[in-house]
Amino acid sequence: MKTTDDHFLAAALTFTILFVVPGGVWASHQSGNAPSGHRVEAALTTTQPVVKPGHQGNGLFYMTNAATDELAIVDPVTEQIIKTIRVGKRPLGVTLTKNGLYAVTANFDSSNVSVVDLKSLKVIRTVPAGIGPDGVTMTPDGRFTYVANAGSNDLTVIRVMDWTVVKTLPVGKSPDNLVFSRDGKTAYLTNCDSNNVAVIDTSRIEVVRYITVGTVPEGIVLTPDESRAYVANNVSDDVSVIDLRTLTVVKTIKVGDAPAGVSLAPDGRYVYVANERDNNISVIDSTTDDVVKTLPTGGKFPVDILFTDDGRKAFISHRDSSDVTILDLETEKVVKSLAVGDTIHEGVAQK
Image (tube, rainbow, N blue to C red; front, top):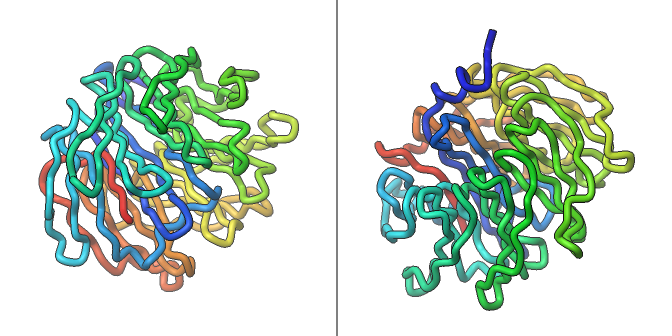
């Protein structure tokens, strides 16, 4: 029988992808590995609920490397690292401000975040967080950064204008992925070791409800109309469908082994779930909430999925093969693999 500890003690560190496109920031999930062996994951803020890379994946990548304590800038066309910037210890998550001027990294072993000026390519500020921050998420209006602290079981809320901590909010055990509603009034946070989703009123920055889901919830995504949320439960190997009007689980969908990242295709109809141990993707039709197909990823332990604007290709990040593969969704074949280096990378951003 698979247990939480058995599952995560075998997990290596991972990386994810964040894309910045004109008019906003779209992001994937980001993943890490806590000292206890539990893998923790937090979603980056999206200005829209649909995840898009934009520009067919031709922008620069901003990657956090936990092994070297650096934010690396990578040209995906030449497949070369063109610049590395030292940040805090063991950076896991990364997000960009709404204006694209700054990158913010969550430094797990430093218990802080680094603010990197993307013009000067230097760290201009270090802001304290809770214990073991791994997820960092920007609010839709760009005014605040929410940091999920897996070690202290809380959120640190930072005001972007002056990089000041305005509140520390206790949540559940090992807080993980956080996603905002489009208007920014509500946040939904997965708590890995509490097996629930916290519903947060952002005007008061208070938890107003907990929704019980599967075992070790990680990825979470909202439908475009924000009527439902899909939560990937890593140990129970299923996806919880939450009705956001009643805040109740209305269906549980069995998927592959160890689902982690969950994303919506640009058309909003299909939900893509990365199954780490099966090295594949379960595709759920959101109109029926049934798995309609299983797709290959071409790498080992897939964790995140992003799409081109036209919805024809998916970019998939893998934590064990340290690459990003490109899946042609029309032919359902992997057409390219982008190596991101021999060392382990935790977060990737593009603009």
